[in-house]
Length: 258
Length: 252
Image (cartoon, rainbow over all chains, first blue to last red; front, top):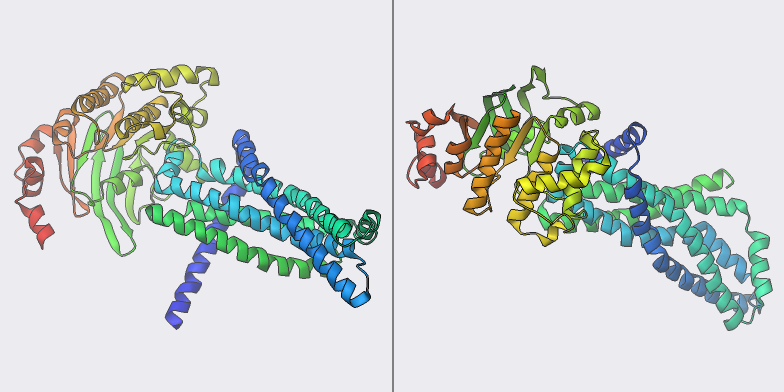
């Protein structure tokens, strides 16, 4: 048992070391070489633009559920469905918008990134990049990392809008709250600090997803089975890390008053 | 030109190279033969530093490249080399034309306007034409190999490492590739290190033949001497006989 635990700790430390060295290589090549602009744009479309509909839909229904739950609860406690906009807005902007969008992108684009880079690893395409004068970190990882870090905060913004719209639909057409009241509840209580709170979180999630998914792809071993394993691990690790990061970031940002 | 001293490499508990000593002369074709799993690919991957050796030294033009850590220094080292991968290793997401000229952007100052012409020329050298627009998934195994060779040739490397250049090719195309290797040697002075199981082509193109067995060099000799060797391992390999020390080793 202790042996297995020791092996697990050693393996985890080795992976953290390898991922850190990849991030170091990213910083090195970012400043030492010209950005692969075409690759970066292509990846931003794949990771960001193509995730827009699924991120917006997820958030739309989340906003609708939040409004329904909040409305019903308020109705039963206070006798009328008040502050629905505030509850929906707060939950989305500070918490669910960044977390759910990160989940969606990790599951959709993160898995694809690991599978693509992993396949390149097992078919020697990564080695071929080395022999043709470029570095896989420069050619593959940096464009994807930038694409994740730019796309996820923007997607989060769209997801927040979509979620609030979902909440609006349920509040106005399901619970009989006026649209004016719903939006006033949002704008009165939610400030720039709340937006910043969600924005900082989404950037942190985005960078983490990029690092995990690219790292898992680059260090794939063992043919098609290895690619499948790496892809599953990338998604699972990303999702768990999103929740872990979320707790600690919330604690830190709250302590800083953001 | 390339001096390999006591080179060692292991993967996990398995020792692949157990102290390889070898001299590769400039402008010559050196062919490495040996059974599967004897470390031929590992050896040439160490030479181009796709793998880092665990022990020994690799000296290229008097400069020890064994433990280079700097990314820039590694990139500079690889500029001199071309590497033909066993399975081609073409980039799936790019077209054939883009694959062929891929290295030009990073390894040369050739203007982009010339890329299309170069792609056409290099593909013609390996017997292919009008396939620049195709994706690698639309090609046969042999065609992929030839496109991959065209990609190596595009950057005009001084040293080319071939990992089984003729496997999967028909006899006529194999002969064309053999002649190409010799052409590069005679016309451009390219140094070639070739891994092959095809003994006919090995004797045809090689200045020196090297047999790896059990992670060490069993025999290294000029092609003519190698042909007449009495070394039982090399002799069995040349004859393609199922009886001999290698077979006995497998059975035990």
